[in-house]
Length: 395
Image 1: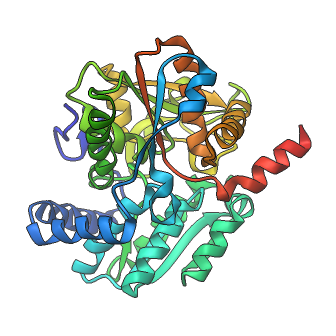
Image 2: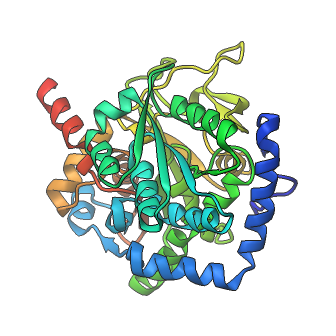
């Protein structure tokens, strides 16, 4: 249903918009990845690392106390917070580092917002002895200090980005500038289902393990498929990873949760489908928060990983064909869900994941006790404790 129907496009979304210098490396990467998808040795090495290094399968947990409080549908959590490094980002990082090694690249470039992709990239670079440079907005460095410390400990060089809003969009821009200059020896390990083709397709494929496992696990636990899948959506890698293996199961509803921020005013949120329009940003055509002149608007989210002006092109396509639905959750709702999941289930979620939990709590109350919601808990919340505590002190 959502396979690429022409070079890098999902319907009318996607494509490969890049400087001339990068067109050759992108075409080379596309051809190499196409071969590796059919390479049994590559696939075996990837799956072995997911098992022995990442710690997969991650569990599926019934949130029984949260379910009881919400008073409706059963809420199951896919526990990506228990993967090595604390989030789903490691699945993609492992896959791409194997590509980089086989392509003979010695230097890894990455961008990060919440820091989890930066940590995952630094982790796999350390494992295979490769140089690693991570670009991160100055604002995100300040609010995700713990992850910066982890990256430094792993041997990565974290480069502060002080242009623009000093968040994820600006980190991506700097990483791409680096790649333009050093493409011969460097591999750009992009963290989400964004950017020029083949990245959206490639990242999705490396994250599909989430949905493949979740589908098997819910059938074993409940004897049937869930009524609804819910996942937060920044660029969209954790959500497309969960959604994709369920696409043919049309009875299963899919809901992506964007960052509603402080309000619906421009610059106060990162809900691309609520305030955006079609445009091109950082290599791909999708829904973007932009003004009438095509200038990218500032964004805001309490969660650094959702604070981005564009959404992955496959999500735009799934919304257009009405296979997936997209909503938004405000900062204060995500904070409440963060605290509730910790208090009721002994699980401290990432603020990104807390957006999905918040919406799941609303939906569960609207559904019947014999119905099932499956939430992708994409990461753990250690990195967000200072932000949450500061919000509590100021409220």
